[in-house]
Length: 250
Image (cartoon, rainbow, N blue to C red; front, top):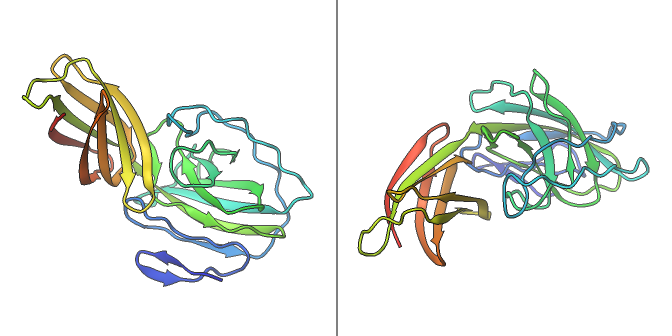
């Protein structure tokens, strides 16, 4: 069985066949542990908005019902903020990759007042499990890597959420003239996971643009206007804050 990493320290999950791995997005503040096989819980129901390809606000396809005869992962999930406060209304989802582009085929009920939810999904493949805030006020700071299993298996895990960030800049042409009323695409590129989060906004009459409700963390920022792109490397988007990027010339 392989090992994962938590804050730079190697650890080994407590039980096979489910492997839980922490993926660092901002700062790694939580891990997870696995427990022995358990009885299957009821299949998860569908919820509202979830991340998907092309737009983080796209409504995903309805949750599929899971077969009672197929092996299941029964995940008891705690969702908390950076200061360990339980978060209500966060939705557990699984995708094959941890970024914002794949519609989640399975998603659970929102967390309760204690930040807890139980989430059941098929054990037929490797999944990335994280939490999703439909209001985009919070973004997952870690994800759990769940390995496939040939039998029912239980999983206890914690997802830490960070408050959303924002970034603003002035867009100009090469001569320094503001680019007014122009569509601007922004791609956040994670240093390990690659393209992570897309956004699109329109510049003001003065050429300024504000991208709000972004996941906090350290990313390369790639801007594109009319087919011309500019990339700002290694930018830290502050949790719960806004960053002034200055002028971006195209």
